[in-house]
Length: 303
Image (cartoon, rainbow, N blue to C red; front, top):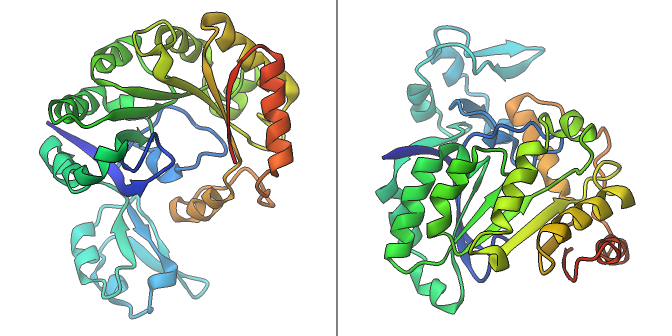
């Protein structure tokens, strides 16, 4: 079985317990305006042009046949939507300024990368599936998780849960830990900023928080300035998850200003004209206090 990934990050310490190997599966059904991995949204593989690596030798302009590269206002511009021999263009670029945003790999190829870090997993680490939305390729994800469990590698997943519940059911037997996002509790604001209703997401959260791994589930909300950071939103989410499972763990994630730099690569506009800064420890603590006031005892502050 094969699937499409856009990254494998080794020695990660933010995607579960211990040192982890995080596999990023391509494709996501959401369209969050602040997406941290915009290169992982589309299911389609496409080329990327890294201007900072380019020496303007003109090789790409000579090789391309259908306008994949052209000059506009004195700058080299990529058009990823035309048919070109992208592999040949990548091969001939002398500085690596052209890359595909993802690759198709087998389960065994993934496992070969994961096994390189197996020595570190003895101290509490493991493998995490992320994205994109890893459950968009749920059969591929399940096979990776199965193989990891056969080899006694701790497994985790990061999911936004806008998937068929049967996809979630299929991977639960092979999961040790799950991180699930609930970004906005308001049913009107969720489609505006995330692109879809939160009805299915809430249904799947209820499934997770009543499953056998409920004590290893962490519900997450990223702090997006002016969008998810209201008292009403944080307390609404906290009250909802607490009503399902009183001992639920809820993580408040600090805003990540690094995502903005990725948007020009895929020709998209970022949601903020001026990129906000990280929240202070005091501000993050206040967000956590709001969640505690709504009944959640296990609040994790990721600053």
